[in-house]
Length: 64
Image (cartoon, rainbow, N blue to C red; front, side, top):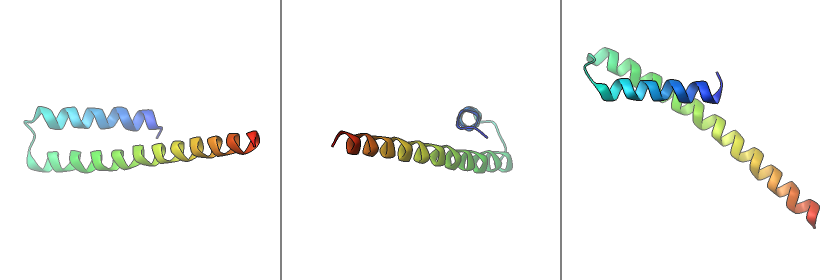
């Protein structure tokens, strides 16, 4: 799953939960799915942050 797909599905889960009207079991299932999607997004963002930090460090070292 790509970052964009996880983000879009997470937004959909949040909208569904915010709309209400779900039973407890369905709400919990969606909540758990949302938590998993949030972790997936965080993993992608952490990886992107590391890549940017590495690129910045390499650029700074090459200017020295």
